[in-house]
Length: 211
Image (cartoon, rainbow, N blue to C red; front, side):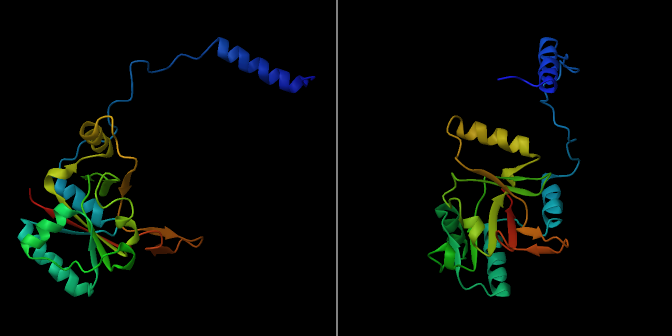
């Protein structure tokens, strides 16, 4: 097959470039340092500001008893009749603290779901979640209202720190799914009209418990 002169010129230039590679301008840099400066705020404040700025609803609880009380108030205010929770540890703690409004047996038919998370990322106001959680892949996505219960010990500053934490936690058995949920689901059409709750929960609550 005959190669055209223009194509031959292009291939010739590529061969010359490969024979004389351009040196890396910053050979000592491996990109291991974060481009973001550490926050001067406490992680709880950093997360709360960024999370609420993305339409999330945030509440701080000093203990699990206050958590149960605040959940009762939310259930009453939002008229939640069917709440689903598939994480035995969280469910048992809430029942012990006085909240036992778990009437839903299927996430597809619930008004709201309650899950935990792997970590909270303060810089982006994100929930870092994985398929290793007993709630699985779907509970935080399919319910119209997602309620996340987390503890202050689960706060990290940025995504890199969070991923390193998971790598240390799971070693060579990383979960098949690791995802970041940043506020409620939202999208915009061609006229830039914001619509919330199309591809996931319309409301996301984080109850952060001291401890």
